[in-house]
Length: 512
Image (spheres, rainbow, N blue to C red):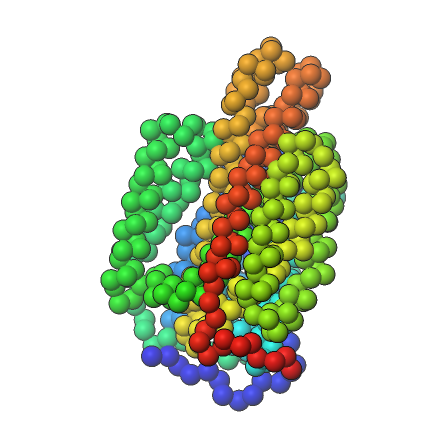
């Protein structure tokens, strides 16, 4: 049972205010996924953090989001989308202030987790509000703006983070969220989006416990495999326990009346295909953006601002094509756009891997342009279609499921690429010893995995041949990480081919 949507018609002005407020909030969430990447070296130097702690500055945020996003959608169903949105934005802003004021690694990582708590409340709510207030027949164009600007924020993160870190210090990459959050709250208060709320007030506590324990164990084990070794008992134990706990969680979701994660939505083949496409594309995109920033600063010796600007070939096509993808979705639907785009996007990530291994800036630029063109034609149609298949309160549940797939994809992308880099860097220890005879093996290993703090130390003290070897190892490890990520992402093409339209929507409506 749900409380009905507001029935009075929305004016064009109110629709626009709602869209700007919701888009601004999502932009904060997505930007904070990648804005930290180019600032990691400065954060590490300032707070005295090593490789493992720096990795968790990024992945603690993503992992907490992946774990809690479905729960956030469920909470929004119960307390109302508007209230969940406002509470989420407020928590996110407070956590951003805490991040900027952090004076230790644990303080920063804890604040990042709190940021994720705010994000999981506002993201499913904002997505449901946008699709519910879009002009009928123009859902694709509206979601094109909503998804496109958020994807642009994901891509612009390294640029903005690099410039701000160079000019003002890393603290300010978090402070910039404060005015955005304030504007989103003011606009939402003025526009008063229609409210949707479920009459059901229960959440299954055991489901929450199983999810919160199992997903971090699984993804944390995968990420640490590169540093600790896949055969280590602790790593194997984390991965095994995570799989087992996740299986128990999914089994329980199929049996309880008040699930956190609504498996029933996945019975819709088209919706499942949408979710898989989103997860697989985020798997490739997030890990790629983060590792590109590392490689551009290490192997290509760019400063943070230059590294950020070097990602513009990825960002600009997203800006140019996202509205095109929205208009074409309204005309052609999902499959005809997503099949070629998913194939192109996964090929682009593989090309980035080849460019990294060969240390070819030309191949890297080509791969970024191709990826930036292709991604909007997968993510926007898949997200819009997934939300459009559900109405009323079910949109909150659908948003929670879709965003879970996206966030799990993002987190696994970073975890797997990080793990691959660690594994690859251990394949040539003899060369490292020969070319870096007087270097601490642990420092050499960390630097070869992309630890910019240790690389800077080697630049000051180690022979030139040793530094060149480390730069090559970083590029080789990241390159193979990209190649494997691209191969995994190619499964999105199969998902797009498998997609089926809703029976009542077999023929796309004519554009208005």
